[in-house]
Amino acid sequence: MSFYADFCIPFIAGATVMFAVIAIKYITWLKRLPKSDLMLIAKGIPTPRTAGAVWEVLRESLLHRRIFRVNPLLGYMHMSLAFGWFLLIMVGWTETVAYLGLRWVPLQGHVFFKYFMPMNGIEGHKPLFDFVMDLLLLFVLSGVALAWFKRFRSRSMGMKRTTKHVMFDRVALTALWFVFPARLVAESITCGLYGGGSFLTGGIGAGLAAAVPPEALAMAYEPAWWFYSCALGLFFVAMPFSRYMHIFTEIPLIFLRHYSLRPEAKEKSYDNFEIQACSRCGICIDPCQLQSQLGINDVQSVYFLRDRRYAMLQQKIANNCLMCGRCEAVCPVGINLNTLRLNSRSTMRNIPNERRYNYLAGLDRSQGEGRVGYFAGCMTLLTPKTLAAMQRIFEAAREDVWWADKDGGVCCGRPLKLSGEVDSAQKMIDYNKELFRRHGITTLVTSCPICLRVFREEYGLQGIEVLHHSEYILRLMHQGRLSVKYSAATFTYHDPCELGRGSGIYDEPRAVIEAVGHLLEPAHTGRDALCCGSSVANTAINDAQQLRIAEGVAQELDATGAETVVTACPLCKKAIMRGSARRVADLSEIVAENLGR
Figure 1: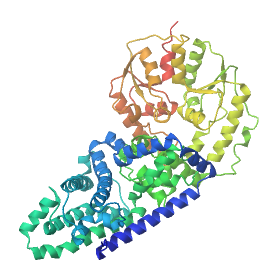
Figure 2: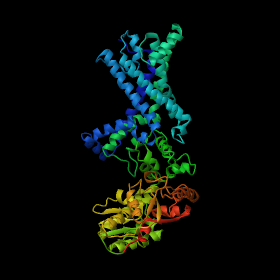
Figure 3: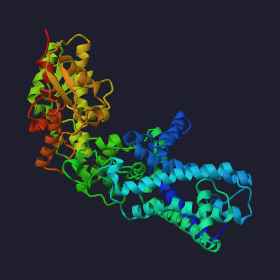
Protein backbone atom coordinates (compact mmCIF):
# COMPACT_ATOMS: atom_id res chain seq x y z
CA MET A 1 0.00 0.00 0.00
CA SER A 2 1.57 3.29 -1.15
CA PHE A 3 1.59 6.46 0.93
CA TYR A 4 3.66 8.67 -1.33
CA ALA A 5 2.81 11.19 -4.03
CA ASP A 6 4.94 13.96 -5.51
CA PHE A 7 2.82 16.67 -3.91
CA CYS A 8 4.04 15.41 -0.49
CA ILE A 9 7.55 16.77 -1.17
CA PRO A 10 6.93 20.34 0.17
CA PHE A 11 5.37 18.91 3.33
CA ILE A 12 8.14 16.36 3.91
CA ALA A 13 10.88 18.93 3.27
CA GLY A 14 9.24 21.52 5.53
CA ALA A 15 8.69 19.05 8.36
CA THR A 16 12.30 17.84 8.10
CA VAL A 17 13.68 21.38 8.29
CA MET A 18 11.37 22.27 11.19
CA PHE A 19 12.23 19.26 13.35
CA ALA A 20 15.96 19.58 12.59
CA VAL A 21 16.10 23.27 13.57
CA ILE A 22 14.04 22.70 16.71
CA ALA A 23 16.25 19.77 17.75
CA ILE A 24 19.40 21.88 17.26
CA LYS A 25 17.91 24.71 19.33
CA TYR A 26 16.84 22.38 22.16
CA ILE A 27 20.19 20.57 22.30
CA THR A 28 22.15 23.84 22.25
CA TRP A 29 20.07 25.50 24.97
CA LEU A 30 20.10 22.47 27.25
CA LYS A 31 23.84 21.88 26.85
CA ARG A 32 24.52 25.47 27.90
CA LEU A 33 22.46 25.26 31.07
CA PRO A 34 24.55 25.46 34.26
CA LYS A 35 24.97 22.22 36.20
CA SER A 36 22.71 23.53 38.96
CA ASP A 37 19.82 23.87 36.50
CA LEU A 38 20.49 20.42 35.04
CA MET A 39 20.38 18.99 38.57
CA LEU A 40 17.02 20.65 39.17
CA ILE A 41 15.67 19.02 36.00
CA ALA A 42 17.02 15.59 36.95
CA LYS A 43 15.54 15.83 40.44
CA GLY A 44 12.22 17.14 39.20
CA ILE A 45 11.42 14.60 36.47
CA PRO A 46 10.51 11.64 38.76
CA THR A 47 8.27 13.80 41.00
CA PRO A 48 4.62 14.94 40.90
CA ARG A 49 5.90 18.17 39.34
CA THR A 50 5.96 16.41 35.98
CA ALA A 51 2.26 15.57 36.24
CA GLY A 52 1.59 19.17 37.22
CA ALA A 53 3.45 20.35 34.14
CA VAL A 54 1.42 18.06 31.89
CA TRP A 55 -1.79 19.45 33.35
CA GLU A 56 -0.60 23.03 32.80
CA VAL A 57 0.34 22.24 29.19
CA LEU A 58 -3.22 21.09 28.62
CA ARG A 59 -4.71 24.17 30.32
CA GLU A 60 -2.44 26.81 28.83
CA SER A 61 -0.77 25.54 25.64
CA LEU A 62 -3.93 23.95 24.27
CA LEU A 63 -6.94 25.50 26.03
CA HIS A 64 -5.30 28.92 26.65
CA ARG A 65 -7.07 29.52 29.94
CA ARG A 66 -5.08 32.69 30.76
CA ILE A 67 -6.02 34.32 27.46
CA PHE A 68 -9.67 33.46 28.13
CA ARG A 69 -9.40 35.36 31.41
CA VAL A 70 -8.08 38.45 29.64
CA ASN A 71 -10.37 38.27 26.61
CA PRO A 72 -12.79 35.36 25.96
CA LEU A 73 -12.97 36.01 22.21
CA LEU A 74 -9.18 35.99 21.89
CA GLY A 75 -9.10 32.91 24.09
CA TYR A 76 -11.47 31.10 21.77
CA MET A 77 -9.41 32.13 18.72
CA HIS A 78 -6.17 30.79 20.19
CA MET A 79 -7.82 27.66 21.58
CA SER A 80 -9.53 26.79 18.30
CA LEU A 81 -6.22 26.95 16.45
CA ALA A 82 -4.11 25.15 19.07
CA PHE A 83 -6.51 22.63 20.55
CA GLY A 84 -8.43 22.18 17.31
CA TRP A 85 -5.29 21.38 15.32
CA PHE A 86 -4.09 19.05 18.08
CA LEU A 87 -7.41 17.16 17.99
CA LEU A 88 -7.30 16.98 14.19
CA ILE A 89 -3.90 15.29 14.47
CA MET A 90 -4.98 12.90 17.24
CA VAL A 91 -8.30 11.93 15.66
CA GLY A 92 -6.58 11.66 12.27
CA TRP A 93 -4.05 9.21 13.73
CA THR A 94 -6.91 7.23 15.29
CA GLU A 95 -8.77 7.22 11.97
CA THR A 96 -5.73 5.78 10.19
CA VAL A 97 -5.49 2.99 12.76
CA ALA A 98 -9.23 2.32 12.46
CA TYR A 99 -8.90 1.78 8.71
CA LEU A 100 -5.49 0.09 8.53
CA GLY A 101 -4.90 -1.45 11.92
CA LEU A 102 -1.64 -1.17 13.89
CA ARG A 103 0.72 -0.89 10.97
CA TRP A 104 3.45 1.64 10.26
CA VAL A 105 2.31 4.58 8.16
CA PRO A 106 4.69 7.42 7.18
CA LEU A 107 3.91 10.91 8.45
CA GLN A 108 2.47 12.11 5.15
CA GLY A 109 0.17 9.10 5.13
CA HIS A 110 -1.54 10.36 8.27
CA VAL A 111 -1.62 14.01 7.21
CA PHE A 112 -2.97 13.36 3.70
CA PHE A 113 -4.99 10.25 4.55
CA LYS A 114 -8.11 11.48 2.74
CA TYR A 115 -6.05 11.59 -0.47
CA PHE A 116 -4.49 8.15 -0.03
CA MET A 117 -7.80 6.43 0.75
CA PRO A 118 -9.10 6.40 -2.85
CA MET A 119 -5.58 6.04 -4.23
CA ASN A 120 -5.23 2.76 -2.31
CA GLY A 121 -8.74 1.57 -3.03
CA ILE A 122 -9.97 2.02 0.53
CA GLU A 123 -13.76 2.05 0.56
CA GLY A 124 -16.43 1.87 3.23
CA HIS A 125 -16.24 5.33 4.81
CA LYS A 126 -16.81 5.47 8.54
CA PRO A 127 -19.46 8.17 9.12
CA LEU A 128 -18.39 8.85 12.71
CA PHE A 129 -14.81 9.73 11.73
CA ASP A 130 -16.03 11.80 8.78
CA PHE A 131 -18.35 13.76 11.08
CA VAL A 132 -15.77 14.33 13.84
CA MET A 133 -13.04 15.38 11.40
CA ASP A 134 -15.40 17.80 9.65
CA LEU A 135 -16.52 19.23 12.99
CA LEU A 136 -12.91 19.76 14.10
CA LEU A 137 -11.96 21.32 10.76
CA LEU A 138 -14.87 23.75 11.12
CA PHE A 139 -13.71 24.51 14.68
CA VAL A 140 -10.22 25.40 13.44
CA LEU A 141 -11.55 27.39 10.48
CA SER A 142 -13.60 29.53 12.87
CA GLY A 143 -10.35 30.43 14.64
CA VAL A 144 -8.69 31.25 11.31
CA ALA A 145 -11.61 33.53 10.43
CA LEU A 146 -11.24 35.34 13.77
CA ALA A 147 -7.48 35.67 13.17
CA TRP A 148 -8.14 37.27 9.77
CA PHE A 149 -10.72 39.59 11.32
CA LYS A 150 -8.40 40.52 14.22
CA ARG A 151 -5.61 41.48 11.84
CA PHE A 152 -7.77 44.14 10.21
CA ARG A 153 -10.23 45.05 13.00
CA SER A 154 -8.32 44.47 16.24
CA ARG A 155 -10.47 46.89 18.25
CA SER A 156 -13.51 44.72 17.61
CA MET A 157 -11.56 41.90 19.28
CA GLY A 158 -10.81 44.05 22.35
CA MET A 159 -7.27 45.08 21.35
CA LYS A 160 -6.31 48.67 20.57
CA ARG A 161 -2.98 47.62 19.10
CA THR A 162 -1.59 44.51 17.46
CA THR A 163 2.06 43.60 16.99
CA LYS A 164 4.32 44.61 14.14
CA HIS A 165 5.83 41.53 12.51
CA VAL A 166 9.20 40.73 11.00
CA MET A 167 9.55 38.94 7.63
CA PHE A 168 9.47 35.36 8.92
CA ASP A 169 6.39 36.21 11.02
CA ARG A 170 4.58 37.43 7.90
CA VAL A 171 5.58 34.38 5.88
CA ALA A 172 4.51 31.95 8.61
CA LEU A 173 1.28 33.85 9.32
CA THR A 174 0.30 33.95 5.64
CA ALA A 175 1.02 30.23 5.24
CA LEU A 176 -0.97 29.41 8.39
CA TRP A 177 -3.94 31.41 7.15
CA PHE A 178 -4.06 29.22 4.03
CA VAL A 179 -3.32 25.80 5.58
CA PHE A 180 -6.84 24.97 6.75
CA PRO A 181 -8.81 26.60 3.91
CA ALA A 182 -6.51 24.66 1.54
CA ARG A 183 -7.27 21.46 3.44
CA LEU A 184 -10.98 22.18 3.22
CA VAL A 185 -10.77 22.67 -0.55
CA ALA A 186 -8.58 19.59 -1.15
CA GLU A 187 -10.74 17.27 0.95
CA SER A 188 -13.97 18.67 -0.50
CA ILE A 189 -12.78 18.08 -4.09
CA THR A 190 -11.77 14.55 -3.05
CA CYS A 191 -15.26 13.96 -1.63
CA GLY A 192 -16.80 15.35 -4.83
CA LEU A 193 -14.84 12.84 -6.90
CA TYR A 194 -14.79 9.77 -4.66
CA GLY A 195 -17.51 10.29 -2.08
CA GLY A 196 -17.19 10.29 1.72
CA GLY A 197 -16.93 13.26 4.03
CA SER A 198 -19.67 14.62 6.27
CA PHE A 199 -21.69 17.82 6.58
CA LEU A 200 -18.73 20.08 5.66
CA THR A 201 -16.37 18.41 3.18
CA GLY A 202 -19.05 15.99 2.00
CA GLY A 203 -21.59 18.75 1.58
CA ILE A 204 -19.21 21.03 -0.31
CA GLY A 205 -17.99 18.06 -2.35
CA ALA A 206 -21.53 17.14 -3.37
CA GLY A 207 -22.16 20.75 -4.37
CA LEU A 208 -18.99 20.81 -6.46
CA ALA A 209 -19.87 17.52 -8.13
CA ALA A 210 -23.27 18.93 -9.09
CA ALA A 211 -21.98 22.30 -10.31
CA VAL A 212 -18.60 21.45 -11.89
CA PRO A 213 -18.01 19.03 -14.77
CA PRO A 214 -16.18 15.87 -13.63
CA GLU A 215 -13.23 16.63 -15.94
CA ALA A 216 -12.72 20.10 -14.44
CA LEU A 217 -13.04 18.76 -10.92
CA ALA A 218 -10.47 16.06 -11.68
CA MET A 219 -8.08 18.69 -13.09
CA ALA A 220 -8.30 20.65 -9.81
CA TYR A 221 -7.72 17.54 -7.68
CA GLU A 222 -3.91 17.28 -7.69
CA PRO A 223 -3.28 21.10 -7.61
CA ALA A 224 -5.51 21.39 -4.53
CA TRP A 225 -3.42 18.84 -2.64
CA TRP A 226 -0.22 20.49 -3.91
CA PHE A 227 -1.41 23.83 -2.55
CA TYR A 228 -2.25 22.29 0.83
CA SER A 229 1.16 20.59 1.01
CA CYS A 230 2.99 23.80 0.01
CA ALA A 231 1.14 25.84 2.65
CA LEU A 232 2.10 23.30 5.32
CA GLY A 233 5.70 23.05 4.12
CA LEU A 234 6.15 26.83 4.00
CA PHE A 235 4.71 27.22 7.49
CA PHE A 236 7.00 24.51 8.87
CA VAL A 237 10.12 26.07 7.30
CA ALA A 238 9.29 29.56 8.60
CA MET A 239 8.00 28.49 12.02
CA PRO A 240 11.33 27.98 13.92
CA PHE A 241 12.43 31.46 12.82
CA SER A 242 9.13 33.19 13.53
CA ARG A 243 6.91 33.94 16.48
CA TYR A 244 5.29 30.53 16.00
CA MET A 245 8.36 28.92 17.55
CA HIS A 246 6.37 29.46 20.74
CA ILE A 247 4.35 26.35 19.83
CA PHE A 248 7.39 24.16 20.50
CA THR A 249 8.96 26.34 23.22
CA GLU A 250 6.13 27.03 25.64
CA ILE A 251 5.72 23.33 26.43
CA PRO A 252 9.32 22.67 27.60
CA LEU A 253 9.25 26.05 29.37
CA ILE A 254 6.30 24.89 31.46
CA PHE A 255 8.19 21.74 32.48
CA LEU A 256 11.35 23.72 33.32
CA ARG A 257 9.37 26.11 35.51
CA HIS A 258 7.83 23.21 37.39
CA TYR A 259 11.40 22.01 38.01
CA SER A 260 12.15 25.45 39.57
CA LEU A 261 14.29 26.95 36.80
CA ARG A 262 14.04 30.73 36.59
CA PRO A 263 15.78 33.63 34.81
CA GLU A 264 18.32 35.49 36.94
CA ALA A 265 19.95 38.92 37.15
CA LYS A 266 22.53 37.81 34.59
CA GLU A 267 21.68 36.16 31.27
CA LYS A 268 21.81 32.37 31.00
CA SER A 269 20.74 29.71 28.52
CA TYR A 270 17.36 29.18 30.19
CA ASP A 271 16.37 32.67 29.00
CA ASN A 272 16.06 31.30 25.45
CA PHE A 273 13.05 29.22 26.44
CA GLU A 274 11.27 32.27 27.89
CA ILE A 275 12.19 34.59 25.03
CA GLN A 276 11.07 32.19 22.30
CA ALA A 277 7.91 31.17 24.17
CA CYS A 278 6.48 34.61 23.37
CA SER A 279 3.77 34.23 20.72
CA ARG A 280 3.67 38.00 20.14
CA CYS A 281 -0.05 37.90 20.75
CA GLY A 282 0.11 41.63 21.60
CA ILE A 283 -1.90 41.39 24.82
CA CYS A 284 0.96 43.16 26.65
CA ILE A 285 0.75 46.29 24.46
CA ASP A 286 -2.47 47.92 25.64
CA PRO A 287 -1.62 47.89 29.39
CA CYS A 288 1.66 49.76 28.73
CA GLN A 289 1.35 53.39 29.81
CA LEU A 290 4.33 54.37 27.67
CA GLN A 291 2.11 53.47 24.72
CA SER A 292 -1.28 54.65 25.98
CA GLN A 293 -0.15 57.93 27.57
CA LEU A 294 3.06 58.84 25.75
CA GLY A 295 2.50 57.25 22.33
CA ILE A 296 5.77 55.26 22.47
CA ASN A 297 5.02 52.21 20.31
CA ASP A 298 8.27 50.28 19.88
CA VAL A 299 9.55 49.43 23.36
CA GLN A 300 6.81 47.18 24.74
CA SER A 301 7.72 43.72 26.00
CA VAL A 302 6.62 42.03 22.78
CA TYR A 303 9.18 44.10 20.85
CA PHE A 304 11.86 43.81 23.52
CA LEU A 305 11.59 40.00 23.35
CA ARG A 306 11.51 40.06 19.56
CA ASP A 307 14.63 42.21 19.32
CA ARG A 308 16.49 40.18 21.93
CA ARG A 309 15.57 36.95 20.18
CA TYR A 310 17.02 38.18 16.89
CA ALA A 311 20.13 39.70 18.55
CA MET A 312 19.17 43.23 17.52
CA LEU A 313 18.28 44.65 20.94
CA GLN A 314 19.33 48.27 21.42
CA GLN A 315 19.98 49.89 24.77
CA LYS A 316 17.28 52.52 24.17
CA ILE A 317 14.71 49.70 23.92
CA ALA A 318 16.04 47.80 26.94
CA ASN A 319 16.08 50.92 29.11
CA ASN A 320 12.76 52.43 28.09
CA CYS A 321 10.49 50.51 30.41
CA LEU A 322 8.84 51.37 33.72
CA MET A 323 9.12 47.71 34.75
CA CYS A 324 5.80 48.28 36.48
CA GLY A 325 4.64 44.73 35.81
CA ARG A 326 1.37 45.62 34.07
CA CYS A 327 2.41 43.68 30.97
CA GLU A 328 3.73 40.78 33.02
CA ALA A 329 0.42 40.57 34.88
CA VAL A 330 -1.51 39.87 31.66
CA CYS A 331 1.11 37.80 29.76
CA PRO A 332 -0.71 34.55 28.91
CA VAL A 333 2.57 32.62 28.86
CA GLY A 334 3.68 33.95 32.26
CA ILE A 335 7.06 35.13 30.94
CA ASN A 336 9.28 36.81 33.55
CA LEU A 337 9.43 40.00 31.51
CA ASN A 338 10.99 42.25 34.15
CA THR A 339 13.79 39.82 34.97
CA LEU A 340 14.63 39.35 31.29
CA ARG A 341 14.64 43.12 30.82
CA LEU A 342 16.90 43.48 33.84
CA ASN A 343 19.45 40.89 32.76
CA SER A 344 19.61 42.36 29.27
CA ARG A 345 20.60 45.66 30.88
CA SER A 346 23.19 43.80 32.91
CA THR A 347 24.80 42.52 29.72
CA MET A 348 24.88 46.02 28.27
CA ARG A 349 25.80 48.10 31.32
CA ASN A 350 27.22 45.97 34.12
CA ILE A 351 30.70 47.03 35.25
CA PRO A 352 32.23 44.10 37.18
CA ASN A 353 35.21 46.07 38.50
CA GLU A 354 33.20 49.01 39.77
CA ARG A 355 34.96 50.62 42.79
CA ARG A 356 32.88 53.67 43.59
CA TYR A 357 31.29 51.99 46.61
CA ASN A 358 34.50 51.20 48.45
CA TYR A 359 33.74 54.13 50.76
CA LEU A 360 31.12 51.93 52.42
CA ALA A 361 33.80 49.96 54.22
CA GLY A 362 33.38 50.60 57.94
CA LEU A 363 30.51 53.07 57.43
CA ASP A 364 27.69 52.82 59.99
CA ARG A 365 25.38 55.79 60.56
CA SER A 366 22.67 53.75 62.25
CA GLN A 367 21.01 54.89 65.47
CA GLY A 368 19.24 53.24 68.39
CA GLU A 369 18.98 49.62 69.43
CA GLY A 370 16.19 47.10 69.12
CA ARG A 371 15.15 43.82 67.59
CA VAL A 372 13.05 45.75 65.07
CA GLY A 373 15.08 47.53 62.42
CA TYR A 374 13.76 50.29 60.20
CA PHE A 375 15.26 50.92 56.78
CA ALA A 376 13.76 54.10 55.34
CA GLY A 377 15.36 53.92 51.90
CA CYS A 378 16.53 56.74 49.65
CA MET A 379 13.04 57.78 48.53
CA THR A 380 11.60 57.81 52.06
CA LEU A 381 14.39 60.14 53.11
CA LEU A 382 13.16 62.48 50.38
CA THR A 383 9.64 62.41 51.88
CA PRO A 384 10.40 63.35 55.50
CA LYS A 385 6.74 63.33 56.55
CA THR A 386 6.74 59.56 56.10
CA LEU A 387 9.82 59.20 58.28
CA ALA A 388 8.28 61.42 60.96
CA ALA A 389 5.02 59.48 60.84
CA MET A 390 6.82 56.17 61.29
CA GLN A 391 8.64 57.57 64.32
CA ARG A 392 5.31 58.55 65.89
CA ILE A 393 3.93 55.07 65.20
CA PHE A 394 6.96 53.36 66.74
CA GLU A 395 6.67 55.57 69.81
CA ALA A 396 2.90 54.94 70.13
CA ALA A 397 3.54 51.18 69.99
CA ARG A 398 6.46 51.56 72.43
CA GLU A 399 8.74 49.76 70.02
CA ASP A 400 12.50 49.93 70.49
CA VAL A 401 13.86 50.51 67.01
CA TRP A 402 17.23 50.34 65.34
CA TRP A 403 17.29 53.02 62.61
CA ALA A 404 19.49 51.87 59.75
CA ASP A 405 19.56 55.10 57.77
CA LYS A 406 17.75 57.84 59.67
CA ASP A 407 20.37 60.36 58.56
CA GLY A 408 21.06 58.71 55.19
CA GLY A 409 24.01 56.47 54.56
CA VAL A 410 23.29 53.56 52.25
CA CYS A 411 20.93 52.35 49.55
CA CYS A 412 19.27 48.93 49.30
CA GLY A 413 20.92 48.33 45.91
CA ARG A 414 17.77 47.73 43.85
CA PRO A 415 18.03 50.96 41.78
CA LEU A 416 21.46 49.78 40.64
CA LYS A 417 20.01 46.36 39.83
CA LEU A 418 17.21 47.92 37.81
CA SER A 419 19.74 49.87 35.78
CA GLY A 420 21.74 46.70 35.08
CA GLU A 421 24.71 47.27 37.40
CA VAL A 422 24.25 44.01 39.28
CA ASP A 423 27.81 43.66 40.53
CA SER A 424 27.81 47.12 42.08
CA ALA A 425 24.43 46.36 43.60
CA GLN A 426 25.84 43.19 45.12
CA LYS A 427 28.47 45.24 46.95
CA MET A 428 25.76 47.28 48.60
CA ILE A 429 23.75 44.16 49.42
CA ASP A 430 26.76 42.52 51.07
CA TYR A 431 27.43 45.63 53.12
CA ASN A 432 23.82 45.92 54.30
CA LYS A 433 23.57 42.24 55.19
CA GLU A 434 26.63 42.57 57.41
CA LEU A 435 25.10 45.72 58.95
CA PHE A 436 21.86 43.91 59.83
CA ARG A 437 23.77 40.93 61.22
CA ARG A 438 26.01 43.12 63.33
CA HIS A 439 23.05 44.83 65.02
CA GLY A 440 21.15 41.58 65.63
CA ILE A 441 17.72 42.61 64.35
CA THR A 442 15.01 39.97 63.89
CA THR A 443 12.41 42.10 62.05
CA LEU A 444 13.24 44.58 59.29
CA VAL A 445 10.58 47.17 58.40
CA THR A 446 10.76 49.47 55.39
CA SER A 447 8.44 52.11 53.95
CA CYS A 448 9.82 51.66 50.45
CA PRO A 449 8.43 48.84 48.26
CA ILE A 450 11.59 49.02 46.16
CA CYS A 451 13.67 48.17 49.23
CA LEU A 452 11.13 45.55 50.31
CA ARG A 453 11.49 43.53 47.10
CA VAL A 454 15.25 43.44 47.10
CA PHE A 455 15.38 42.55 50.80
CA ARG A 456 12.98 39.64 50.25
CA GLU A 457 14.26 38.41 46.90
CA GLU A 458 18.00 39.11 46.83
CA TYR A 459 19.33 39.37 50.38
CA GLY A 460 18.67 35.89 51.73
CA LEU A 461 18.07 37.28 55.23
CA GLN A 462 17.77 34.05 57.17
CA GLY A 463 16.36 34.66 60.62
CA ILE A 464 15.18 38.18 59.74
CA GLU A 465 11.54 38.83 58.91
CA VAL A 466 11.08 41.57 56.29
CA LEU A 467 7.88 43.64 56.41
CA HIS A 468 6.52 46.62 54.54
CA HIS A 469 5.26 49.30 56.92
CA SER A 470 1.66 48.54 55.86
CA GLU A 471 2.07 44.95 57.09
CA TYR A 472 3.82 46.07 60.26
CA ILE A 473 1.21 48.72 61.12
CA LEU A 474 -1.64 46.27 60.60
CA ARG A 475 0.11 43.73 62.83
CA LEU A 476 0.47 46.32 65.61
CA MET A 477 -3.25 47.11 65.32
CA HIS A 478 -4.20 43.41 65.49
CA GLN A 479 -1.95 42.94 68.51
CA GLY A 480 -3.64 45.83 70.29
CA ARG A 481 -0.38 47.75 70.48
CA LEU A 482 -1.58 50.53 68.16
CA SER A 483 -4.97 52.21 68.52
CA VAL A 484 -6.46 54.39 65.76
CA LYS A 485 -9.60 56.55 65.54
CA TYR A 486 -12.20 56.08 62.79
CA SER A 487 -13.62 59.20 61.13
CA ALA A 488 -15.88 60.13 58.23
CA ALA A 489 -12.86 61.05 56.11
CA THR A 490 -12.72 59.57 52.60
CA PHE A 491 -9.60 58.13 51.04
CA THR A 492 -8.63 56.54 47.74
CA TYR A 493 -5.66 54.23 47.47
CA HIS A 494 -3.05 53.90 44.76
CA ASP A 495 -1.35 50.48 44.60
CA PRO A 496 2.40 50.95 44.07
CA CYS A 497 3.76 48.64 41.37
CA GLU A 498 6.56 47.17 43.49
CA LEU A 499 4.25 46.62 46.46
CA GLY A 500 1.25 45.21 44.60
CA ARG A 501 2.26 43.33 41.47
CA GLY A 502 5.84 43.09 42.73
CA SER A 503 5.24 41.76 46.25
CA GLY A 504 1.56 40.76 46.24
CA ILE A 505 0.60 43.19 49.03
CA TYR A 506 -2.89 44.53 48.31
CA ASP A 507 -5.08 43.83 51.35
CA GLU A 508 -2.96 45.17 54.21
CA PRO A 509 -2.89 48.84 53.12
CA ARG A 510 -6.63 48.76 52.50
CA ALA A 511 -7.31 47.24 55.91
CA VAL A 512 -5.32 50.02 57.56
CA ILE A 513 -7.14 52.74 55.58
CA GLU A 514 -10.55 51.25 56.41
CA ALA A 515 -9.63 51.40 60.10
CA VAL A 516 -9.39 55.21 59.95
CA GLY A 517 -11.94 56.17 57.26
CA HIS A 518 -13.91 55.26 54.15
CA LEU A 519 -12.05 53.82 51.14
CA LEU A 520 -13.04 54.65 47.54
CA GLU A 521 -11.43 52.55 44.81
CA PRO A 522 -10.23 54.09 41.51
CA ALA A 523 -11.03 52.59 38.09
CA HIS A 524 -7.70 50.75 37.87
CA THR A 525 -6.89 49.08 41.13
CA GLY A 526 -5.16 46.06 42.65
CA ARG A 527 -3.28 43.99 40.08
CA ASP A 528 -4.49 46.36 37.34
CA ALA A 529 -3.35 49.56 39.09
CA LEU A 530 -1.57 52.21 37.02
CA CYS A 531 2.10 53.09 37.44
CA CYS A 532 2.91 56.56 38.80
CA GLY A 533 5.44 57.06 35.98
CA SER A 534 8.46 57.89 38.14
CA SER A 535 9.88 54.39 38.24
CA VAL A 536 13.63 54.30 38.87
CA ALA A 537 13.71 51.46 36.32
CA ASN A 538 13.21 53.81 33.37
CA THR A 539 16.29 55.77 32.39
CA ALA A 540 14.96 56.86 29.00
CA ILE A 541 11.88 59.08 29.42
CA ASN A 542 12.34 62.67 30.58
CA ASP A 543 10.75 64.60 33.43
CA ALA A 544 7.98 66.04 31.28
CA GLN A 545 6.99 62.55 30.15
CA GLN A 546 7.01 61.30 33.73
CA LEU A 547 4.73 64.19 34.66
CA ARG A 548 2.25 63.33 31.89
CA ILE A 549 1.92 59.80 33.24
CA ALA A 550 1.57 61.07 36.82
CA GLU A 551 -1.14 63.52 35.77
CA GLY A 552 -3.12 60.70 34.13
CA VAL A 553 -2.90 58.60 37.29
CA ALA A 554 -3.77 61.55 39.53
CA GLN A 555 -6.78 62.42 37.38
CA GLU A 556 -8.17 58.91 37.84
CA LEU A 557 -7.58 59.00 41.61
CA ASP A 558 -9.13 62.48 41.92
CA ALA A 559 -12.19 61.24 40.02
CA THR A 560 -13.15 59.07 43.01
CA GLY A 561 -14.03 62.24 44.92
CA ALA A 562 -11.93 61.20 47.92
CA GLU A 563 -10.56 63.91 50.17
CA THR A 564 -7.11 62.31 50.36
CA VAL A 565 -5.11 60.23 47.95
CA VAL A 566 -3.15 57.58 49.85
CA THR A 567 -0.26 55.51 48.63
CA ALA A 568 2.33 53.33 50.34
CA CYS A 569 5.43 54.23 48.35
CA PRO A 570 7.47 57.42 48.77
CA LEU A 571 8.27 57.55 45.06
CA CYS A 572 4.59 57.25 44.12
CA LYS A 573 3.70 59.93 46.64
CA LYS A 574 6.13 62.42 45.10
CA ALA A 575 4.95 61.60 41.59
CA ILE A 576 1.20 61.81 42.27
CA MET A 577 1.59 65.04 44.25
CA ARG A 578 2.81 66.68 41.04
CA GLY A 579 -0.42 65.92 39.21
CA SER A 580 -3.14 65.79 41.85
CA ALA A 581 -5.35 68.64 42.98
CA ARG A 582 -6.04 66.82 46.25
CA ARG A 583 -3.97 66.05 49.29
CA VAL A 584 -1.59 63.12 48.77
CA ALA A 585 -0.32 61.25 51.84
CA ASP A 586 1.61 58.13 52.71
CA LEU A 587 -0.27 55.41 54.56
CA SER A 588 1.83 56.02 57.66
CA GLU A 589 0.81 59.70 57.71
CA ILE A 590 -2.93 59.04 57.94
CA VAL A 591 -2.28 56.50 60.69
CA ALA A 592 -0.09 58.90 62.67
CA GLU A 593 -2.78 61.60 62.33
CA ASN A 594 -5.46 59.28 63.71
CA LEU A 595 -3.66 57.63 66.62
CA GLY A 596 -5.93 56.82 69.55
CA ARG A 597 -5.09 57.13 73.18
